[in-house]
Image (cartoon, rainbow, N blue to C red; front, side):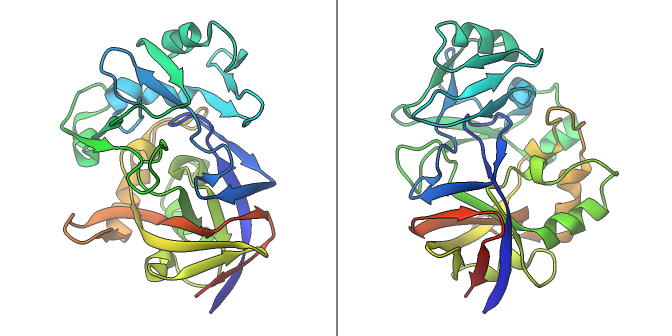
Amino acid sequence: MISGRLVQVRRYPVKSLLGERLPAAEVGETGVAGDRALALLDRETGRVASAKQPHRWRALLTLRATGAAPDPARITLPDGRQMSTAESDIDVALSAAVGRPVTLVDTVPADATLLRSHPDAVLAAGLAHEVPADENRLGSLVPGTFFDFAPIHLVTTATLDRIAADLPPGAGTVERYRTNLVLDTPGDAFGENDWIGQELRIGPDLVLAVLAPTPRCAVPTLAHGPLPRETEALRVPARLNRVEPVPGVGAQPCVGAYARVVRAGRVGEGDPVRVG
């Protein structure tokens, strides 16, 4: 059994927007309380807006969302102005910020999808160009949610540190890979690959089932608030950890792992972690 500790808890109240670090949180079937509870819906296409399609939606990462129900979330706009998600003109402000007509929604539309641009094509063509993309359905593991797949994304400090060693100073890692739980455990970078199929216990109650390595899209390469664009954030894991996340999809650059919740619980920074 591997032992360690939880060093960060993070959530993203609005899908594809910047999020927040929390000292502690409840974690249930739908992940960290308040995580991806909201999303922007493209009024022209009916799809959920996602920075995984950078040429259209990279401006989402200039916005930051904080807070969770029962209170309205708050969104910080690029000019520093803060708005409550309950304000009547929130859709107008968000549409202006991202350059397309959008509606903030808290209910997943029937058959909700988003477009995920091929990351290698984004690297080759640049951010301004439309490139081939896959249409992915949301909530495949937890129906009625805005998650692409699983409700928890976890990563170890060893993995983040190894990637950071090949990035420019100050490039950032936790922010770019948008993880929920950062774990400090013994072992080498990308050790999460070996946890697939095992249970992970955090604190006195939370139990997770580790499902698959997390394949990376183009999002880590994008500017995240004050962090500049950094293409090496995808190229480094492509060199170091190109694995097949699930059988039949081919090898992809992966960072961290997806997990589902077996038993809910409250967790906080410093809680013990046990794998296996």
